[in-house]
Length: 261
Image 1 (cartoon, rainbow, N blue to C red):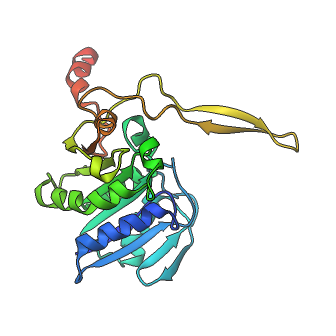
Image 2: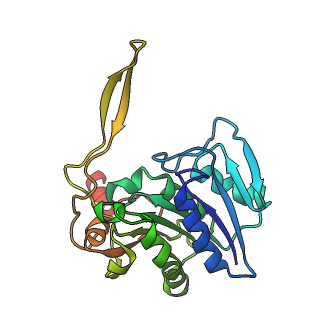
Image 3: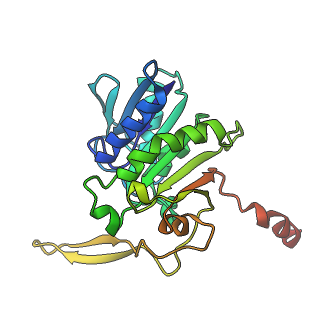
């Protein structure tokens, strides 16, 4: 199996080392793992692509490249430049430091990488490690992803639902903020929404007198509705959410058609 991996935390992020180990386990001795990851952190860029500017790509070592672009850029570069158009069998994106659950999904570069792979017709899985007090006490904060990652990916490949539609399925996996031994299982859940948790801004004035704004996030440990991703993670379960890039509100189409007739 040939696997392409990327992330949004950057080529030197510890989560990418975890993902490399997961991918090598899945690919096996006869397989190939190719890395194309952002040269610098690209958290929060979503599905951005560098459509209006070129990006530099550099070979760091065998099958390992850094690109000055987003995770989606890296997937495109990996397929059409590094692999010369030979699509991989699987794209893995992550392992993100922090959860990509709830409303975070819409901002996530990790999700953006997996989404681009799906749009390119390649099976894809995004993986993220929810952080919290229990993971801070671990020698390896990515322990849960490291221990359970390969098995979870293998189960998705063997038993998951995969299709070849225009907006084909991809998967969003969030490992809970607990140690590996405390994981209670795996749940297939919907994307949730943390109510009263929003991104905002915090203004600062530089020594030169210029005014800058830092984007600030909301509390990450507020539960979402039962049966959704954050709630499952906070209960100790690995959350697996099937996704598509299609943003149509299909449940509202018929009613809207009647209203506009």
